[in-house]
Length: 261
Image (cartoon, rainbow, N blue to C red; front, side):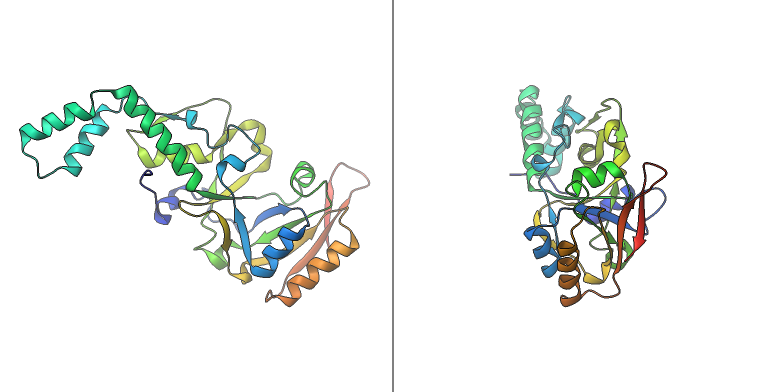
């Protein structure tokens, strides 16, 4: 059993206020997994438990108290054939232990999260820390995608950053509460400018349209062999008009400079 899932149309309200981004970026380490993903044309959608932030998608971001009204409405919706008296009896039964009901829905939410796949992107292609953390200490690369080319895939939602928990009650706003849990992170992560794609019932390999990949940026420490390998894979597997750039270290500031190669 799992909670009711929200569909793609629901995500539209979480598109960044500035609109669908022109470009989104994904940092990666150059390894066999990345090479396979480029050959086959997929990205990996992770389960929330695989994230490096233990607060990411945590159920404490949602308030599961006061389920009585929700449960009574559930009886009305699911047992419309019952007469008024029998329906009152059913409501008394399902609301007999509200703490237990809250815990059941919290457990179901955790289960729902583990069915979900999430793929993380950023709006920032030259952040030194992100190159360090997500691209093998600048030895990896950064993939550049154009969402509008494959909107069915790149229906992105913007992560919101906060200094404190502001839980929304699950029973008053089921879908919004779940989305808040998926899209709320501590402000210590705000430098990431994170954008997410969520798939309610899928994780692992999910395939994109190859024309959506528009560019590859190599790190300032990426080896010539890795650059050559990636360029060969892309040229041989149906990608077109890819812009290649590489980061270099500025000589007058702590900045990265991205130049065509």
